Length: 351
Image (tube, rainbow, N blue to C red; front, side, top):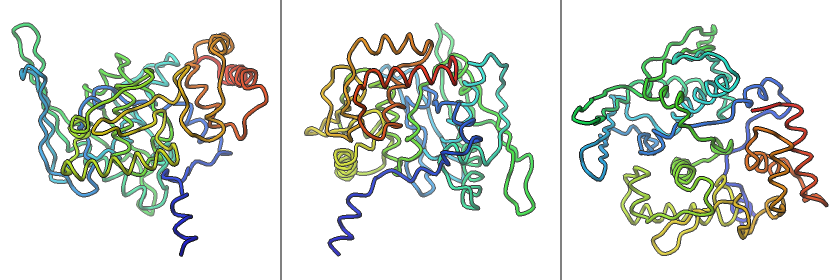
């Protein structure tokens, strides 16, 4: 019994990585770095519930003049796991834009590719879940007003305008789907109002973990740290839990992050009723207890040399990828990292 408990405590909070590392086709998919639009990261549009959520949500700015209201369909609000579909579409469009291609609001994709890229199972459950996600995304309606001067514009739209299953196999599984994004999402893409997400975002088990990471990614960003009150965080998460239960849920996430460092990019700590996010990649920052790869320190001028070795690349993104790839600390970390950057640029060119 003791052994069983110990094994469970040592288990990573992350879902298994379902990507096949030797699969070239999956690597092609991953050339499109996961990205999310900042517009839907600003408000808790997506439900954290695993059961149908039929709550109507309304958010107002400090003046009370501007608002955003989210209304569910009979199938409930789109969930934060349904958001994976949007992230995949945004990532593919951004990759095409960076490659100089023409894009449109209509995205045609293979269901299998989406499931693999978002770390979902590719069995019948995976395809059924994707179909349900499309239904909820299309059914979730957003109403918002935009005030310019003396004119108020009222917009009412769905998260995605429509979805179409283009082809199915004989056993009923979808092969290709066509998704028409809303103007709201597509405009954010064209304005490049998007943020890159860590790929382990798709491995986070708990909906609340995903939402907390999104909030940290948007508000902490590249800063060394950022903090927010527990009650304010609950509102930003859109949690329907009681204050006491929400604190308990956050405490559990903090404890697991202390033990496993599993929240991507940011360490999460709770001090009294303040939630503190600490950037794991900030320069000259004291590193929290972590695996050996995370304890490796780089000299400040190495980052400038890395920019020269991989022109156009975000060197902090490359550092993160290098640390994840690392199996043991190198004898000369700075030289090893610069060599990694050169190889990335040689193989992939400019991002």
